[in-house]
Amino acid sequence: MASTKKKQEITTPQIEAKIDGMVDGDFKTKAYASATIGGAFAIHGIRVIESDKGRFISMPQDSYQKNGETKYSDTFHAITADARTALVEAVNDAYEQKLQEQMEQKGDAPSQAMGQQM
Image (cartoon, rainbow, N blue to C red):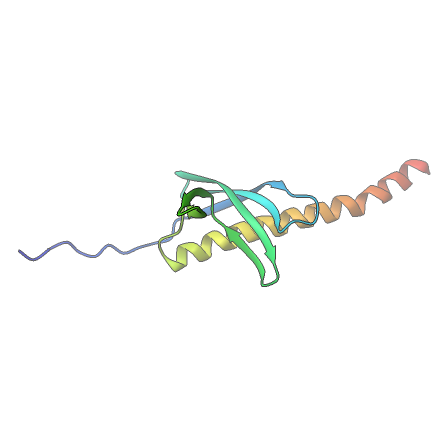
């Protein structure tokens, strides 16, 4: 019997991301983020990583042993390229905004101190 199901049109839900914490020091991981998908699902433990090849986003992972070797498995991943792109863009935008806020705070600190001395 042939299937009569119609192929569902896949749409990418709205994704909102926020930076939960920045990592100080000379580490590849620069920040941890969370994302909310369609106002219905939350992902925690997304890592923002800077490597020699550039910045990338790492999904939350579980580790396990197989044949004496540590392996990793994403606990969450996007199904479509469009969804992956939307998630990466949302996390990158949140990270860039957080970096900008930090730059502004560092830039404002001396002028505020000078203003108090006058």
